[in-house]
Length: 166
Image 1: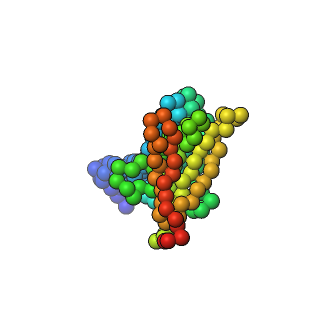
Image 2: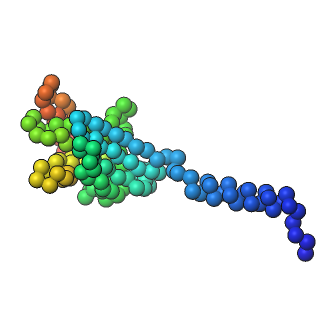
Image 3: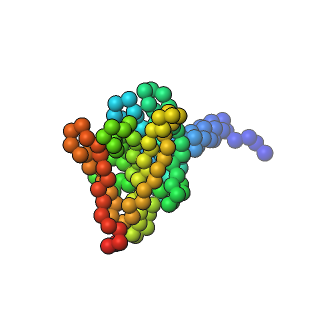
């Protein structure tokens, strides 16, 4: 059997190279969200679309050094939570002071999915003895929540509603 013409072989090689580049290309739906205040910076990254997202991570740096870097997971929805992107112009990542004299904390707004569920707030508070951040989770249910500043130099607090009305 005669071998295929050279132009066919060249075309086949080019198609294989192009296909391998498409397979190895970075996910076009990858996203990075960053929030900074003072010496604290937080970066939330994920790829894919929620709830089938992959590689959701939160990295917190303090004074330029990584203080926490972990996969995003919740006791209410495991790795299936996604950023609460419902409100236009609303950031899902915040660096705020939750107590007037306390250190800056990082807050990540997540949604667990479902018709009547659930806004999950992950709060990462600095453990001054270790220099690392500890995660606390709050489930605000169907009404959700938003952070409200208590005036200049004050702290922020969560504003929500009674979930029993849902």
